[in-house]
Image 1 (cartoon, helix red, strand yellow):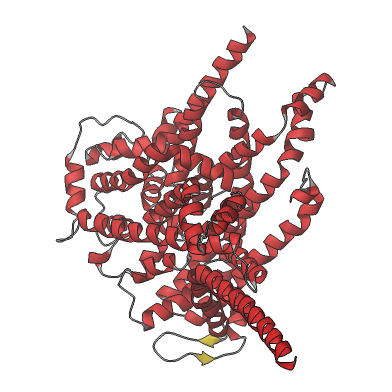
Image 2 (spheres, rainbow over the protein chains, first blue to last red; image 1 turned 180 degrees about the vertical axis):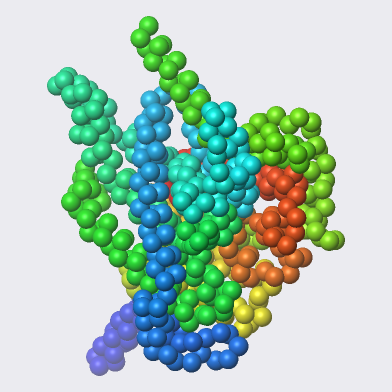
Length: 315
Length: 278
């Protein structure tokens, strides 16, 4: 009798341990699948982030070992570095002007292409071309020459009897040329808007037309509200990439003239890789992280007030 | 009648505005064929006074004994490896997140999403120091290795979303048939994710081919330069800029981009529209 129960419990135990073993094995397989990312996340993201935070409190030129300076980098940045403030001003100006213009253009063009007509597919592709070449050095070279003193823009202006100038080298216009460059690359938000516009049921417009709503009020009462999730997405993505803009400014204007296009990322690069002030550059990176996080959080927080989801559950 | 009138207006407007959009690209192409004097005198014109094909030969000859052939080869090696690495890592990881259960899955997925928005400047400096210490500066490793460990979390997210859309019944049927987890991934999921794979491959190609900052930081030896860095050599302030050859090589650098656009336009446009790639 006794032995019988013990056999029974033994059986139970082995069964349970088998199940446990299976679960453990399953877990291991799952971790094996995500291991490439996990490795990268720990070694290339979390590790460097901790290191970066530590470095931001040090003086480090990569020759001697880092020396702890406490909050000194941050204090210098805020109280004694006018170029830091200049780079912030330039970057904010750039983001606050280029993002709304880019999105407005993208939406305008998407509305043109939403109705199926002959040639729309081709047009859509043509309008997308500037965006696919966007970040390349070739485009930077092209822009530099187009807006130069002897460039094509001035050539065209002279047809109209307007005498141009060296737009790239002008403290008043250099930033504007870079803004025009990114607005010109409105292709991706345009395609995303287009996909969003196609999701809006046509019945809504038909019903509104029957009620005698004008195109204008249809746009503001139907199109915009139905499109808010897409506007939200485009806004977040464009804002983040706006804050990190580097290549265009670095190559076209080199931050100049008079620091008028000294983007934050360009200044950070200069501090880190030209002056080898790795501690200071790390502190700058953390300020950038905080700025991006705050803006993203603000947009997310505000979204409940203006982003409309058709099915609240389907968010 | 009214319909055709508005149609004509539409086409005229769209074509006119479209020409304005691609004028800079045509202009670069035209300038790559112009003699030096033309580039400045006839700046706005799209028609060279004479076709100077030499610009391409002169540009290709490059600097010293390093031709643009070297830069193109370097860019190709880096780009192909990055695309392969991205495809392998992002599909494996995405399958894990979309289909398998494991402890801390939720937390880790939130981490993945958060890194999409992380400015790369934050990790740039420690990563540079790390690569510097292990002697990887002036090699392709810092450009290529991150791709194999899920370097662009957005691609993983995109694949996760795509795999979630594939019916689970397929997996369950395969399990009943005695298929292993890897078997399900390899035989069931992978073949069905082809459209998403195409999108990921194209964009990782574009971003790597065009990337300027990473090679700028890690490569010092001209022999290792990618096309982006090669183009920049032309506008080195210490050298007299040869505009014709510079434009010729700019156009050459865009050719792979345009070829892919031509062949995979549909995947590309749909990929952006449905997944919201930048």
